Image (cartoon, rainbow, N blue to C red):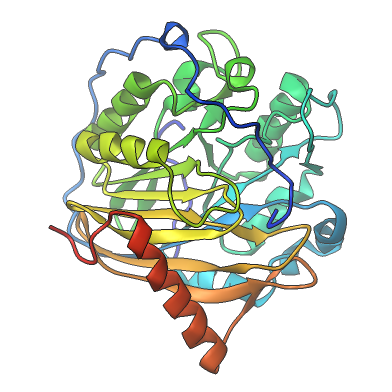
Length: 351
């Protein structure tokens, strides 16, 4: 049975296209890492067995907007897989607002507050807002996104009203285990404009590596299990890029137990970076256009160790919902996902 209370703070075609740039924002834009605060010690239930479930990018626009006419069924049968997990997380790839002004970018996504009712009904326990669409309608729309989440009782992470809130770990209990989740965006588009500041709302940026590493270390001090959910990767490229690999190494060294990602609109491979389990990309999940391999990443954890990870295979259907696969289609999709490991540099088992 799920426990959803918070203990502490915090396409396949088009859709998120970002212009290519040779380097990250300049180091001058990097904020100082916060000083370590006194944190509660991890709980005594650290060795419990947990099932975690992760999905990729979710939003409600065009064909998926109609799904909100009945939020209870918006995700379709895949909700059973999410609900069965002790903790389920997806990336909410949209502003939740009816206000604001479109930002100077190509694609804009927004949804009504019923989007949160839909993810809750699907068994999702928390959503990442560290992505390149959360501020599509500016900080007015982002304020609505945060307010609607609070009103719905849906925990969000990776963004907030200040930089401290954006980088703070969201800590959720599952079977008595403290699970900390942090989220970062590694997308160039409007990164300097959308980053959170000392008194400015926004999202947690991966480009501020010292701050991101400090956030993971702070989560490590407070929790039994540390999960990082990143928005990163090159669109439509099933292999992780150099920035992903470099950042994953920094997060693993800082104490991340699991590193999960999305954004590329296609699946990317998984495996182990030392003792850290990494799934570079989960692709589209509830999506407004196209069809692609997708699924629920189901991860079995004992203590801090991932003992089993599998993709429950699905395909983005004509409604935009994930349609679970069975039989030979499921077996073929599973093989395709396993084969993606070849270009990740990840191991098939923990070191």
